[in-house]
Image 1 (cartoon, helix red, strand yellow):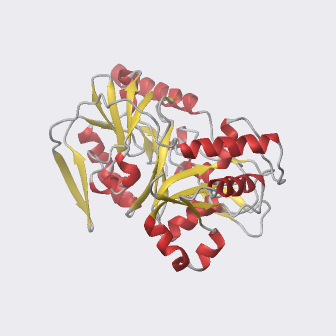
Image 2 (tube, rainbow over the protein chains, first blue to last red; image 1 turned 135 degrees about the horizontal axis):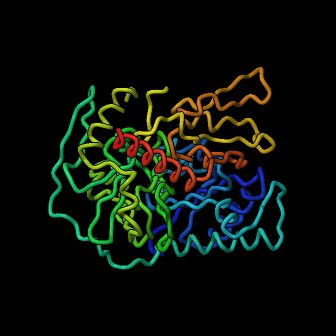
Image 3 (cartoon, one colour; image 1 turned 60 degrees about the vertical axis):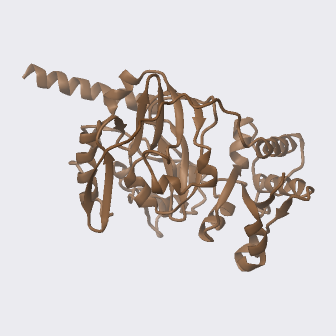
Amino acid sequence: MSKTICVLPCNGLDKCAGDVSRRVALQLAQSDAVELICPVLLNQNKSRYEKVLESGELTVIDGCNTRCASKLAGDLELFIKEKVNVSEVAKALNIKLGVEIREDEDSKAVVQEVLEKISSSVAVQAESEFIEPESVAYDSFSHGKFIFKIPKSNYFFNENDCWVTVSGNMARIGVSDYVQQNLSDILYVDPPEIGDEFEQFDDLGSIESGKAVFEIISPVSGTVVAVNTALSDAPELVNESPYEKGWLVEVRLSDFEEDQDLLHDCPTYFKFLQRKVEEVDV
Amino acid sequence: MSESTFMGVERDRIDWSPRIDFSKCNDCMDCVKFCPHQVFEVDENAKPKLKVKNPNNCVVFCRACSKTCGPDAITFPDKPETTNMIKAIRKAEKQAKEDE
């Protein structure tokens, strides 16, 4: 660990999941490379942590899905490098933490698992097998002060505004320009795990701005083979280049022909989106 | 909203909206604040306060509000079943058009 890691945990006083995040944070803080950030003090006085946050990368530990720590970071427009949710880790382990704060085997197991998740966050992934097109041509239309770009061809969309582009049996998935503009500055991309198998319309993680969280709803079925690691340092790539550099997930397709039944090609999505922005005031 | 559709299928023929388990709901209203589509409604004088007012405003396959729910009180219909139902309706309509 060369760079400092700033850890912003849940306050940890409300229920067991919170207490676990507090315990994880305290264990992490035993390393010299880790600086703890108290959420209450941060909320009260951001400048107290300005130096620390400048020198290091921020890891957020949420206790439950109320996600107070994440929301606080979002409100203060802090760039989050990594995020763990204790309740989700517990769920994956089939452990029910409940309300009562307790220090038993179950809660210890969750503490351990969260610690492991944080230390092995940079998942090992294979070299990308996706062959990128040399250039992508775009169509666009404007609505008010917004201009929406849509590729001319080779991309397919679901009506949840997520795209897929295919090369052989590999594909890349991302969000449309419309999503990116709606969210405005993207602060965090929460990717799925390498090796995850998923069905069409399952969620593939989420992206988050100070304004909202957007669930990535997969246009296809398949297996996750890679995630765009560039986004952990530069989530703004999704804003700058939603169809190319800002791709989110690379997958091995399982049945694209079947999936295509519920997808739009570029010209159809273009018309769909035009109608949509007319209806919803963007 | 009868004119709204999902993949060409009228929205009101697709059963997709949040189900709330009121034994878990703690009235925090995070889901209401989160959802930009006015799916929920809050009636301060009613019990429970929270209501799924506009189920057909819910974006088909979106489950994002359930992830904001601290007490895990929100669930959704089975996704593969919904997908298959949409495909079946589309197939039937295509067939009907061809038969005309």
